[in-house]
Length: 352
Image (cartoon, helix red, strand yellow):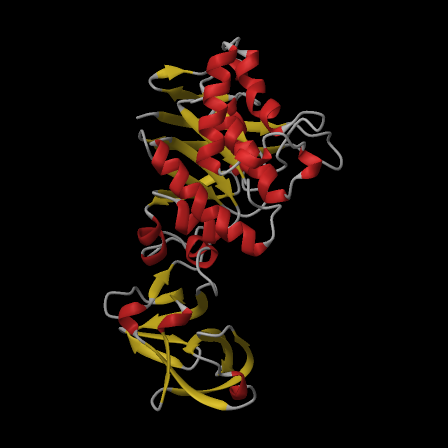
């Protein structure tokens, strides 16, 4: 494995008042093979950026070990680790041109001038920065500054790239363009990357594997499709997907599962309370099913997201095309039992 995080733990002592002590990371274990893009995703405060800082050497774990190419990084200063980090805020020197910003990490490593120039020219060609090399950061757009920040990491040719929400400061259209470019670029370089984001679209489209974190712990690790289709917990199920998965309180009794107005065969489900999850695309609107009222609609062009209510349940559904005219009307909806997910209603929300 190229990068191994082995049972990493970190506790912040806080100040005892506004910031009480808390465990930022608890037994976080992640293995990333060479050439993989691993995306760590989760809500704010889940520990994903702290995990990245541990790998970069900006923080040290209280327990556990971090190994890069088989070598432990415990106690190694950031500059001694063969990693390059791209930050959310670009972190460019404002008085330097793009070329000077790109050359700076090589200067700090005493790379000869000719080699610096060659590496910068290669990175500039790769990122389409040729015409910007003479400009300072205040003469560039946000997307151009982020390209320079990525180029500064590329010229180092590190073993590992670390990305800390690098696209979150950009507008939606530019973020979509750069997301595609970034994925192509990292794979073209054959690089190993650890990418932190709260954006599920970035996680699903960039990752070879996704790590979902919650409250300092790893909830699930797997390829994007596996995470989406076989979520291990109700938290993972509800976090990934747009609109999010419907999670309904349900009861299983004598082989029948009941959730709101829906009832279907639950052979194998233990009797008692549980939680049923169903993706909006698996809510079927048609002539069959139970009557529900459309409370809201979000027409998005190729599809419309509906909010349905009835029988004590509120759930979202997807229908093709524009369907804003359905607001206030009654429709019939059903759930395919084969596409439903059953979870324990307890705090862990484990898949049943």
